[in-house]
Image 1 (tube, rainbow, N blue to C red):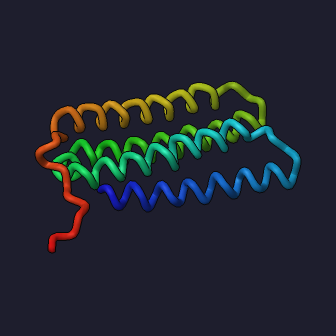
Image 2 (tube, rainbow, N blue to C red; image 1 turned 120 degrees about the vertical axis):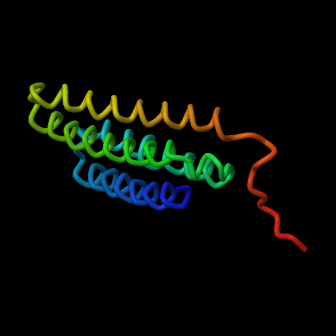
Image 3 (cartoon, helix red, strand yellow; image 1 turned 180 degrees about the horizontal axis):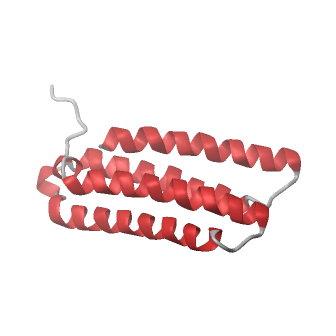
Length: 133
C-alpha cells in the first residue's frame, strides 16, 4: 500500500502544479482552494501516508490501510470535483453538501490511518532502510 500511496500522491502533485500553472497564466485564481486542497490532501497526505506504511509493514498490510487508501481517494475526487463546480457556478445546492460529503470521507480515511498506526505501528517492527552487509 505504501508504494500505491506514493504513486497516486505524485499524480495529485502533478495535477495540482498544472492547476497552479493554469491559474497563474490565466490570472484567474478562483480555484485557489482546489489547488491548495489537492496539494495538501492529495499530494502531501498521500505521500506521508505512503512513507508511514513503508516504515511499518504490519500497518501497510492491514485492511485499514486499504480502507484508508480508497476512502481518501474517493473523498478527494468527490470533494474536489464538487468544489470546482461550486466555485465555477456559484451554486451552493447541491454542490456544498456534496463537497462536505467528500470531506467526511477524507476524515474517515484519516481515522483509519489513526487506528491503523496505533494498532499496528511500533518501533520494534519498523522496516530497516539500511542495506545488510
